[in-house]
Picture 1 (cartoon, helix red, strand yellow):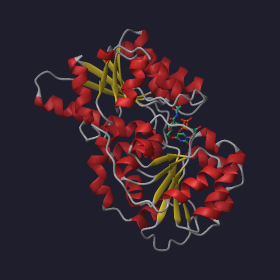
Picture 2 (cartoon, helix red, strand yellow):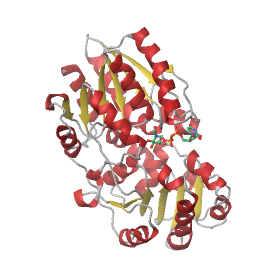
Picture 3 (cartoon, helix red, strand yellow):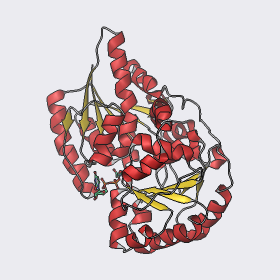
Picture 4 (tube, rainbow, N blue to C red):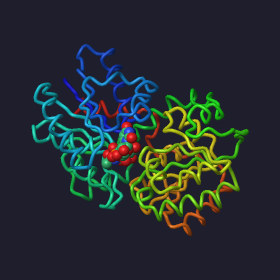
Length: 379
Ligand code: UD1
């Protein structure tokens, strides 16, 4: 059997690493071999957004890199489809496995399905019901086309059933990203906070002791970082109302860094003692930062899930989430506050005194990748 799996952007790498490991494990145990090829579309290309994750997570180098790079959504999706179609015609895989909800996920599932190649979607069934998010469009199309839909939780399975997907095509397997978290948590905990800050700091300033109390901020969604007025208010809130309580460690996504500079907010932030702006950090570094944080303030879905398992109170700067399983109502510690400052302030005051409270939804047990591979083999 030949499987092509696809990655394109940063959040894909922690999801594909355990799947590739499950295939190698299978090949060591069985005479029947799986021929696996990894395709990187090249959507994320900076070392800090891509290569460092391959290295840390022991992902073998991609067999094929499509070199798509940055661009508008149509450009990224269109170029990926054209390039990936050629790979499919040459390689003729039995399956294409896509993960998550980035442009690579959409483009490669469409290209595969048009050539009648079976598609498996890992992390199927997530829905924010917000069609202004490009990821929601990617999720809907990918799930509609997939032959095998592997879901992380029962809520996601429910969405697929409601949409009319045949239940025999759906399998609840758990959250594959937690396989990666479990594998790397202990080595991340041996890292020093001060080293992480020192090694990644964008603007050098003196680093005092970073003790038990610090918050981690990450923002990259267009709804939060593309509009000057929204960014100005967020930065002002962090400077005036968060920093007096604790230090802030803020690994910055390239889009956010660019916009902070365009909006002339960069100088303001770097002049505030107690805010450390970091380059995009590696997986282990982020896990270490998260494990010791008093809180995380983020618009990343993946971080919401990691906070849930690590028990870090998480203020989610979004109006909706495709991962409701991580919210307070469902047992997690994530609170949706959108980007209105009044909501963020009240959420911040509520979460600041909270204790850590780790929570694992069913099957977030570190063995999801094996179940994914089994589902494909059993299909
Ligand atoms: C993509 C995903 C998003 C995911 C995020 C994680 C889609 C639709 N979006 O958004 O779901 O949460 O990745 O990071 O696929 N850039 C660099 N270096 C890089 C890559 C990008 O500098 O290696 C810059 C470019 O200026 C680019 C911008 O970052 O225009 C945004 O990159 P893009 O690929 O458009 O999507 P993300 O915002 O990263």
